[in-house]
Image 1 (cartoon, rainbow, N blue to C red):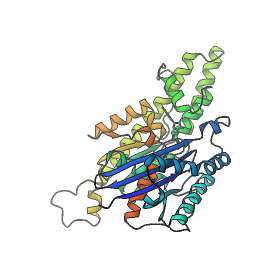
Image 2 (tube, rainbow, N blue to C red):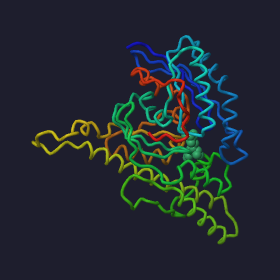
Image 3 (cartoon, helix red, strand yellow):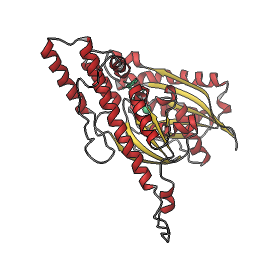
Image 4 (cartoon, helix red, strand yellow):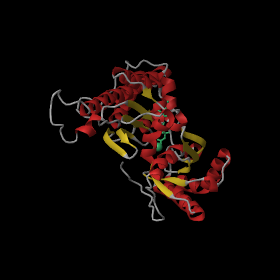
Length: 365
Ligand code: KG4
Ligand code: ZN
């Protein structure tokens, strides 16, 4: 296999990132991965401010690319292509990245590849663990929550997801309601470690309905009511009340994600079921369905860092004799190595974009 080296660029949310990934006969290797976060810029606003994010990306992208090349010990002339997140995401940030990539492509003559950010996340378990197709991918971050059946480098099927908030967003709101710092997930997890998850039982929205869709916004309202009840009873919120509320909230999120994962794995397995023995002739589409039972279960996104969530998902994977693949956190959250990696196969197939590449705020897989 000819060695291919790609520069990846990512700027769809609040991380400015650039990375160099090389693939040769030994498999893919991350030569560098630089992520410049913007948490401090947005902290005072309680969420990502698109204008501020776009400006910060525009200011830092050049530096970020320069640093990624330097850490890889390479120059632009050593690259085979430039891959950039072309969506979905905050459009100002995506545009900054796409314009930077176009400038580099125009100056060097290198092929330009516009990558779907979600495809980057979905293919990461192949980069980190060499996971074989097909597998189930649960993407749980501050902005995303979906189940993807990943059947090939460009074959993704969404088999469910949130109908309202993403779980990370719900963790962040939970933290805000309880006066905890942002990002909320780690703060809620730390509090929950001291809490009793059974004291404030919270609902499990949509769990009684079939399918793999999820809902997390009702959880926040239920938490608000439980908090107000505790305050009304005791005249204030004690440290223990807060810990118990966090534990109840975390347990609810973990159970929803686990039960819906169980169903998503079952759905993939049932599609992949062999036809009854002796059945002939082979039904149309059978070969495609045969390859469908999940060979693996992977999780990505910031919420995958949560110990309770991870333990619940590991248990579900074990029920099917699978082990949960969770890439290291730095590759689970937004980064450019996943974008470069997703561009590799596109380059091999000659599926490249030109200067007409558009930045897309919405881009379902
Ligand atoms: O994937 P990510 O870094 O960024 C995007 O959303 O793109 O995910 C960030 C989200 C935040 O909402 C944060 O609160 C949540 O992941 N998070 C956690 C934990 N660490 C980060 N949620 C629960 N438990 C954690 N330990
Ligand atoms: Zn992301």
